[in-house]
Length: 233
Image 1 (cartoon, rainbow, N blue to C red):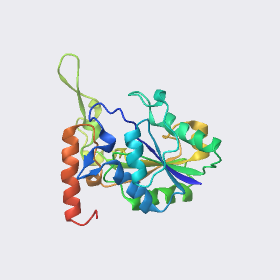
Image 2: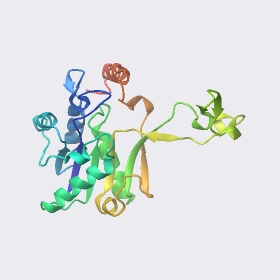
Image 3: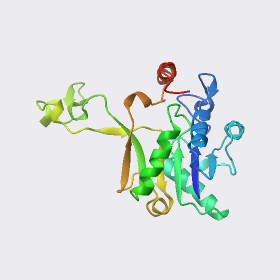
Image 4: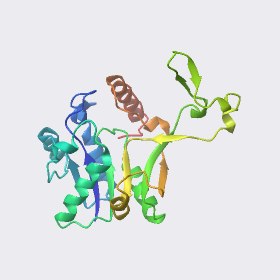
């Protein structure tokens, strides 16, 4: 069985009600649920939540909410991996033998069904433990600065002060949309970033963090532009 697991707790602090906040007129979780359904890759689509409000909206958009996430897995410090582990254990105890799963984040309006399918294809053909969507940093990270305790600028890698940007290796960061995992390998290692993880490289214009209200406004503008270019229908 191949499943989608969408971790969507109810206690967001920086953006209250984030996982069901309206994004261009729709609960933002609906974009993830729609992409999961359009991908045609899943036997089941589950939402792991501690919130009845989120559960109600998730069911309206075709997902299952067969359990309530325990409170100890729904605080500000809980990582994603334990939430996925809980969902997999629930499925196992209730007769579901999971071969692979896709963790899909609920606040990912730029997620595309095509990318989900591409991730599954990479997972199976390469026999990878995980496939992680990533994108490039807009500037070379090896020329990055920090501010030290005295308030002065300090290069993180001073050895690259004079290195040409073209000579620095490309660096990537997590796109924050979804992760494909081989279930058996995940249950063994209990982490997403496995040694045999493969990248699925996305263009930067389709990746946007949603940590602040400013991020939210930026993402809505980006989405509108992409819609006008008929890249999202």
